[in-house]
Image (cartoon, rainbow, N blue to C red; front, side, top):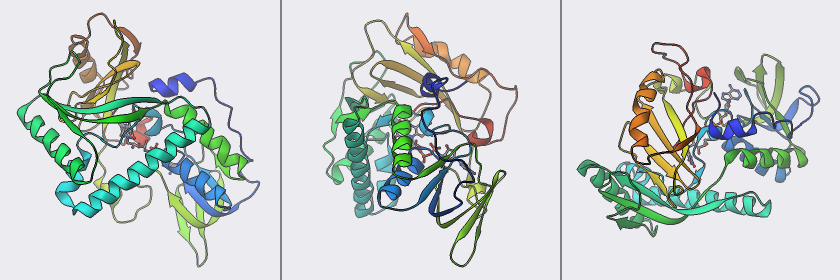
Length: 336
Ligand SMILES: Cc1cc2nc3c(=O)[nH]c(=O)nc-3n(C[C@H](O)[C@H](O)[C@H](O)COP(=O)(O)OP(=O)(O)OC[C@H]3O[C@@H](n4cnc5c(N)ncnc54)[C@H](O)[C@@H]3O)c2cc1C
């Protein structure tokens, strides 16, 4: 079953049409992967005058981007604290500056094209004492690089909590209309977009690279892999990959959804809310059946009694454990 976002675009495809696959086979740059990273990168290169193709194994946004909660926030759970623990403060500052720049670019892009964007404070909250430590660590890390975060003892949501850190004026959007707009822009700037073309290998020659797909080859002076997970046998990265899948359900709740975005990062039974819908999800360290997720679902509805389910996670695929990646099992139905 597709995610909330992909479900909404099902049957409304066809807006993006590019040149046929074998029309032009040599490029300055080929970007592999048409998620938010690959498509925006492709557009920026095409705008800069490069002859660009974006080559996608499935369809636009089919993997991570079309399965997120579409938050455009710099707070990001406890990520800043994690980076701050391992790296010097100037690295954390660069990370935040890059994120702010990317966030502002995306918001400007949406504003110029009248794509709907909501604004709300983002909260990372805790339910346990160890969670509070993580929230404080996130606060300290964010403050160390100048982000105007605040610690908040009480939240206005009917979910148990013992504290939170918040950053005002963050954004949320439906990722699919944005991706489709970027794809149309890419094509109008002379770029090519090919869906259903899986890159299976990249062979390097002296001045160029040959990308193979089951449908034929293309040549590029530069190749950028924006596939989310590694696809080439370099550095053994594929062996360090652990498959994870999240199961989500969205509800329209009596009295309306909370006005902020709330993320509980330190829990295998995560909860996430954003204005307009309340999304609960259960995460597993590795891919498992959705039966476990179904068992957890009733717990979520205790907080908002009487919800109307607007979206359910996937039906159980096959009983038993699957040691496969989200890419090979189809799109994870997930939120974050
Ligand atoms: C569960 C979850 C929730 C998240 N929620 C948020 C959020 O709310 N806000 C936020 O900012 N970030 C969120 N993130 C982080 C998220 O990873 C990024 O924001 C972003 O969506 C990643 O985009 P991407 O383009 O890098 O990857 P993807 O969207 O995964 O795109 C990669 C593309 O590469 C294609 N591909 C793979 N292999 C090949 C191949 N061999 N040949 C051709 N194409 C190939 C795939 O089909 C896919 O379309 C979330 C991440 C996860 C895992």
